[in-house]
Image (cartoon, rainbow, N blue to C red; front, side):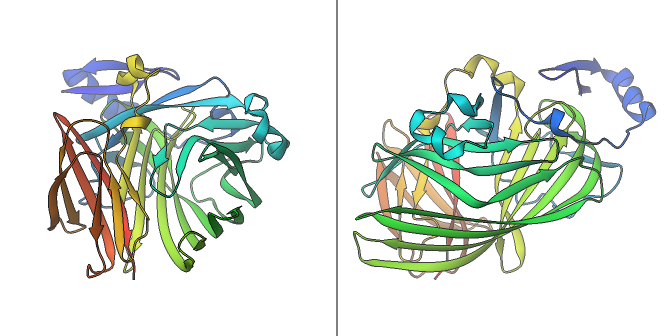
Length: 359
C-alpha cells in the first residue's frame, strides 16, 4: 500500500506500507481555512488530468472530517493551464480589464463551419476579500473579442471556512454583427459543505469542499441562420481546495438532469505531467457544437486517422456508433432530453466529451 501526502506546493512525498497507514490514522486531520494566499499567482503553471466521468460517484457524501477517495479513475487526457499578470494580456484585451489582476491562458480551442475560437483567457480579480471571474477573452475567426461581466462571478469569498455560504449574480453579452448575439445571466450559490482528506490518483490533501449551484439563462441568436433560442440551465461545480495549491486539487462538474446532478467532467492536478507542461493538448481536443442541442450536433474529432466514435446516454446505453476522420453531423431530434457522452478512440488514447440534448 502506498499513500501520497502533500509536500509543499508543487509535489508529494511517498510513505509506504504500514507506516503510511499508521501515519494517516494517528496524525489526525485538521479543518483548514482557505485565503487569498492559497489562490494562483502570475507565473504559475498547473498540470491537469481529465478523467473519465464516473457516474457512480455519490456527490452527496460530504460534511466534517470526511475522506473522499478518488484514487481509482481512468485517464482521458492531460494539459497545462498557465497564469499571467493582467498586465501581460494582449493589448486588445488589457484596456477592458483595468481593474483585474490575473489571467489564465486556457488549453482550449474550437473550430466549426460557423466560427473558430482560439487563444482563450479567463480573467480574474484576486483580493483579500474574494476571488472572482471578471470575464473572458479570445479570438473569434481571428477577431479579438473581450467578454466582460457587468457584475462579477464570485468563486470564493475569504476567509473560506466550513459552513460558509454566499451567492452572486453575473451577466454578460457578446455580439458580433452579422454572426451571432449571445447573452447570459448567471446566479451562483456557493456552500463550503465539507472538510477532510481527499485522495486523488496522485496525492492526498487536507481540503475544503466548495459546492456551487449555477443557474444560467442563456439567449442566443445566430444571424447566419436567422433564428435563436433562450434556455435555462442548472449545473453544479464541486471543488476541493487545499492550502497553497492554487487551483482546486480536484474538481467535478455536473449538469442537472431532472433534478439529478449527472457528472460531465472530472479534473485533478497531476504532477506526473510535468514533462508535458509546454505541450498542451488543445489542438487534439474532441468537441461538440451546439451544446445544448435540439436538432443536430456536429462532432469535431482530434486530428489524425479515422476514429471509432460512440455516443451513450447517462445510463451507459449506446445511442450511436460510427467512424469519422474529422467531423460528423448527427441527428438528435428524436433523442430524449438529457446528458450524452461522445467517446472517441485514437490508438491507445480515449477522449470523452459530454453534451446536453434539450428540446
